[in-house]
Length: 93
Image (tube, rainbow, N blue to C red):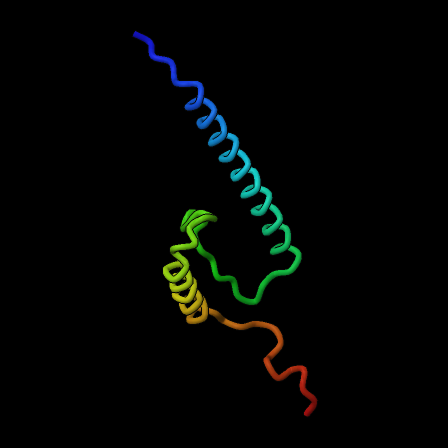
């Protein structure tokens, strides 16, 4: 026998689908803007984190995510080979 979802359930599923579409659209837009900025203004050092490491609403994981950022920054700093101007290049002799 075919069971149809309750009207309220369908509305909830539809709202979740729309929210997911909105989230994915914003993520794509942010990704494209970031890529364009990176091409225009290449950073001296880039610290990367996986995009799926958390969701925007996981505030309770702040300490864990901050520590992950610190760890990735340490790794990036260890592998960093500065190029271009030296730190004291803007000072007069």
